[in-house]
Image (cartoon, rainbow, N blue to C red; front, side, top):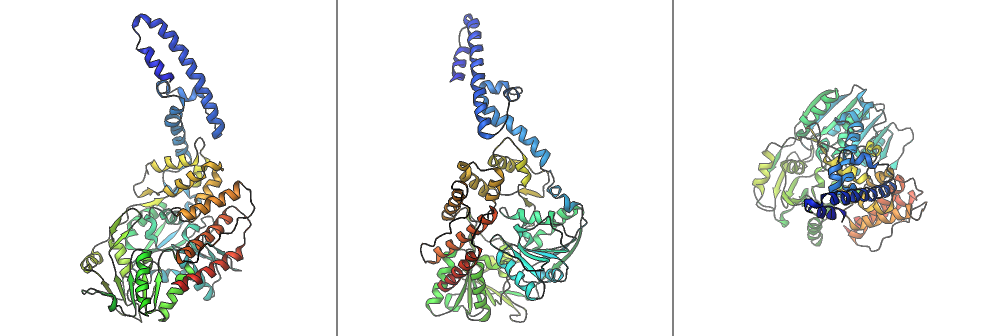
Length: 545
């Protein structure tokens, strides 16, 4: 309104110039008074201490044209925050880990195709060390290696976002990669599926582990596509490298003929790319009295293990799975059958990449059980599969980095805005790129009404749950209100409303959220109830499958 009046005064004829100057000066004074009040309110709401003179000194023209708040938000604060970013956030991600930089580390790269013994060899070194850590992409893999090490006489703890099991006298830990303790010193570390360092949502956890682990001997297991990227990072850290490349001992053969459902035989694994498709295929076989194991992403690890065991023992002669089968667990699979070659990646349906085809197809064959692994399709897609198996994979060109906690030390802006600015900063090194932080921003938007400290917001946005599930997000907000509005010392346990497969799966995730929220906020909670409920729900899911 003031700006419009000033524009009108500027349009007066020159004979009114003297009067214009006086009126213009009055409006400038009025504008300053209004601006100072606006700034005072902003400082009070955001606990800042911005001064009017500092803001307008280098931005006077913009201030007169757009107002104090526009200049504050678009000019002044970004300049201050940018300086703080430069001061607190190193331009090279390796410098965020000073303890690791003081060490001389040696990396052993175990790289190659699926099902070639890479992780097994690395774990032998871990098993024979005085202390160590195994870092896994999946909770079920962390659980399996926790059990393996303990059964082989190596006391080992388990640490994931959903559980902590401490074993007396243990100097080893089996963890999901996000739980890596970069403050602790280990003799040997094993990081599995290291090619996930390029994953836009989770890759920063692998980058953090590679750059930050305080360990003189680190084994990296994964695909050859990560080789050059890892070499750049390790050499930049000044550490040593030894590389071993692995090839399959069991050959893969493709079958030209299309596979029809009645042609499926024991030892076959059918691969689809949605829960709906997997369950539909499973129902087809179950209706004909053919036992089958089912694997997809939302299944609890306890259920996955029961399903794996049924397939391994022959109780279920065939396996029906999503591409979750492509990571970690080696099973006695005679033939992989692709039921489709397109998958939804969260944004669009696309053809499978060569690496995805190789990861999945590579599960066929098992030394001592099936000396040849076969690959087939249900549609006329075998030429596509053959080409993807032959083609050279695209090299990983950048590791993903996430925001560090140092961002909490930067004042002047809410955490959400700081993260948004962080995400737009260009990386100074080409072999790093920013994490996709859309999930973080969504959580912070939901937390805005509760006026929580940045430290609390940070902890809450790091909780491991699917923020794209409306029901889980609703449960999360209920926990936030209980904890910070009602000041409850203990959260209300989630309730199961229906006994369907999808409801059981969702309820399991709510129980996990109850656990991780309580742990993160140091609340009292019924840990025994968590374990018993998860076990009971897993049994019900297994029965329904």
